[in-house]
Image (cartoon, rainbow, N blue to C red; front, side, top):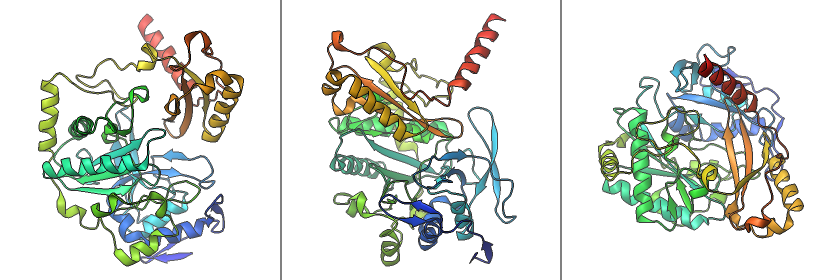
Length: 422
């Protein structure tokens, strides 16, 4: 039992292993990490509804997303009701202090996933999230170069960017906004920024939504669509070294190494240097300069770009058809809730088709993290563009073929067909 801010927090199964492969951590040690950096971690989540991404079996187990607040929760922990693009609503947890932070970590929340809105402004984000996502084989140096291009553009637009490592292979840059614009405008501004960075650094940056069209570092504008969340500052990522999404000074970006920031190193850094993002709330800016970029793109005929799956088609959005369906010779080789199982299926496919496998480039293997209603699953596809047509293996039954959304999609298709006939 821990006493935090006057509240008693019970850590259940405190000795349960949460990381075992490289860094070894128990659940209690994870809770103590978050308490050590609570001053910074709360800066990213305080006053915001939060999605509970729960790893109840530790970092090596499968996670699931829980939007709705648990029925059994402390009376002092507040909630708010959010509405989603689907029309559904959910009462979500709002964490305001270290006690609340420890309570959700005890539920298995290794990562923290807050929405970009405050509880008092649920339809008006106060955070623009710029997610730099490198493709396969893209070096970390390119991620840093794209981040510095974003920094320069934001300065031109009188906006302050706050960089942090993603805790994986990428980088996040958050921009505090005045809460005056809706989700559609914030996403539109993010798309305009992504396209402008692509124009300035076309060899290393892309705004293309479909993986088959990407190269270099993808600026994921759709992270600003309503109901999307990303891991916040000081979040631990479920990687073998327990890497942390760590706030940086801009002066650190050019030479930083994400592997330097882990559960074992970040508390000392925080104690010595404090939180580089501590003053973010003092720099709320206007979205208008980026919306002016969006107007320019619209005037040039660019229009909207694809939205995430399950979102209604946006005004000005072109046909939402992946280029792979139209022209790319892709085959699906694995579907599984387990990424490891899906990648094992890829290796079996390569063993069955060694000649084709030998001709694949590193970015011909597309590992897609698919999000269902409450969980993620992995789809692995192979682009056969470098394999002569006569030698291309046909589409086979994926191995494994465990798509957790298949039943829902089949039911949806039957309902749609029934409505059409009636």
